[in-house]
Amino acid sequence: MVQGRSKQVSDWGAAQRNQAGFARLDGEAFPEFEPGTVWLVGAGPGAPGLMSLLAYHAMQHCDVVVYDALVNPDVLRWVRVGAELEYAGKRGGKPSPQQRDISLRLIELAKSGKRVLRLKGGDPFMFGRGGEESHTLFKSGVTFRIVPGISAGVGGLAYAGIPATHRDLNHSIIFLTGHDATGAMPANVNWRSVATASPVIVMYMAVKNAAEIASALIAGGRDPGDTMTFVSNATMPQQTVMETTLGAVEAFLADHTPPTPAIVVVGNITPWREILDWYGGDLRENPIG
Image (cartoon, rainbow, N blue to C red; front, side, top):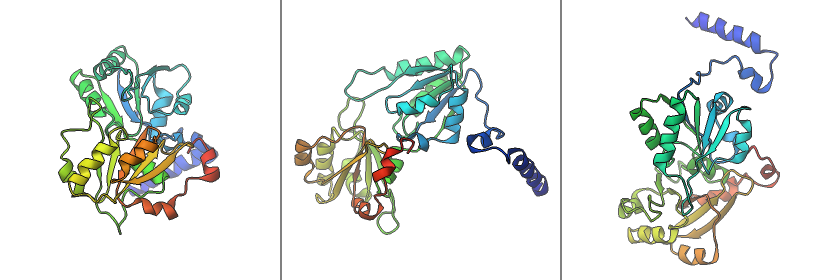
């Protein structure tokens, strides 16, 4: 079996030897994007270059793309010519389609025989409602595939020079959302337990409620001097990073407005930016990432 596999690899290498770039992938056995199916695909935190090969493959074979507000528009120029584009973005505090309507639209498109690409910012299952949508597809008998994406809570921090984990600093990390379906601070999060459960807390969609969250964390025993960092437009040329502390965040937000979308990080891992802040200067001029 090993010898047979080696010969197969060798034959592939001979066939592809004169190819270059993405053309070398043409002979690979990518999964077929069947008509009547839905692929829920993570487009990553923003920079187009952070998408996966499976995501790119789906864009080349889909019939319609139903995309979110957090998908970088530059990504859509890679969708195959002739595919339809449907916007289904949801942004807090702004008029947005209902989640049920989006899910029903995916079912409708799939049952009409289309290959449906549901393109979502970050990762579909990381506060991206991918679980809800795939559950609805399952109940409706629609076949689906999940293609994970790089989440902003990890990839965005990397572009800010902030390691999500570091062996000398934290052996755990908490990811949570900073608002519930109403836009308020999530009431079903045990903030007292969260406050001291991990050295690092990474929050999505938390800018609006940052001061209230900080108060809850301090009340739960968190050090008011802990750093609170806002990473806005992560992995994009316009990325910005703002720092304050839990105790000072209310006054900070009175004078500053962190751009959204943003990741909010609590924990003293941001000092690593002093030596790991690599994404600057000429690197910002490359829109691919």
